[in-house]
Image (cartoon, rainbow, N blue to C red; front, side, top):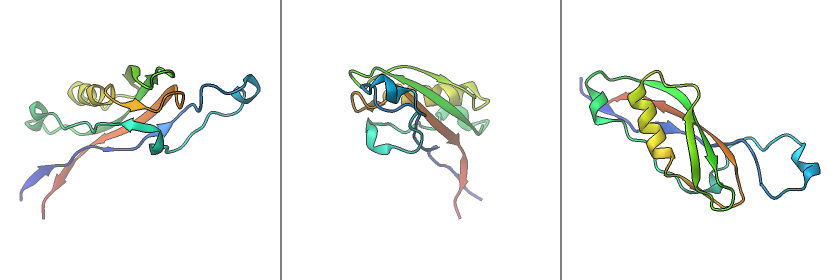
Length: 120
């Protein structure tokens, strides 16, 4: 049976909404849900070549903190981890390159799953 590596599945969940809202609105619940329309550029993490010998899999969440003025990611961290540092690093490296529409988000939750697929 042949095996192939599938790219990681990902979804984007926006945790906080627009930055320039009035203070009365900021006390409301933050915007939560899939908002792919806020992403200008979002590269997909690649399964690391170095990891293919051991074939680790796992899922975790990358938290991105975005500069509201520019839409560029200022920092990223894994909470929780995929359980494998090499997978965490691949996800962080890719998502740090993401870019969002200015004044759209401040904090973004990006679930990531690394899996191995089969060819039939």
